[in-house]
Amino acid sequence: MNEDNQKKIDENIEESPKTEDKSKTSEKKEEKSIEEKLAESEDKLLRSLAEIENQRRRFEKEIKDAFEYGSYNFAKDSLAILDNLQRAKIAIKNDEVLKINKDLDKFLENITVIEKDLVSIFEKNRIKKIDTKNQKFDPNLHQAMTEIEDDKADTGLILQEIQPGYMIGERLLRPALVAVAKRKSNKNQGKKDKKDDK
Image (cartoon, rainbow, N blue to C red; front, top):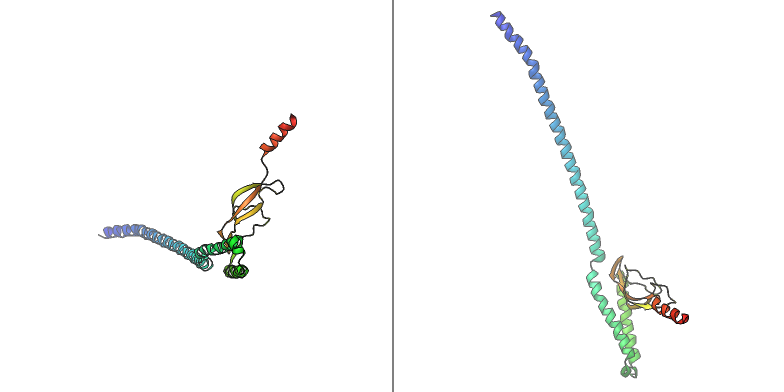
C-alpha cells in the first residue's frame, strides 16, 4: 500500500506543474485581454474626445457665421430698394415734364439724402459696393453681360457697370453686372487686307 500511495503522490507531483502552467497561461490570456481592452477603451476615448472637439469647432464656426452672415438674405433683398431708388432718381432727372418743375431739385436732393442714408446703413453692416472702375474682369466678383469692341482698352477691362455688385464681409452678396472690353474681330482686318491687295 505504501507503494501505491507513493505512486499516487508521485503522479500528483508530476501533474501539479502542468496545472500551474495551465493557470499561468490562462492568467496571461486574461492579462492580455485586459491590456487589449484597456487599449481599445483608450482608443475609443481619444476618438470620442477628437469628435467632440471637432463638433465644438463646427458649432463655433456656425455661431460666428450666424452673427456675421445671418442677415445675408435680408441684405440681398434690401439691395433692390437701393437699385429702385437710384433708377427713380435717373428717371426723374430725364423726365421732360418734371424738368420744368421748380421743385425738382429739392425732390432730387431728398432722394439723394435717402440714398446716402441707405448706403451708410449698408456700410455699418459690412455691405460694400464692389469697385469696377478701371478694373480687370474677375469672375468671382463680376458677371459679364456684354462685350464691347475697343482697340484702346485692354481685353477683359471693365468698360461699363450695368448694375453694381456688393460684398457682405468676405462673401459675395451680388456680382456686379458689367460690360467688358474685347479687341475688334480679325474678320474686319482680313477684309481690309484683301482690299489693299487689289
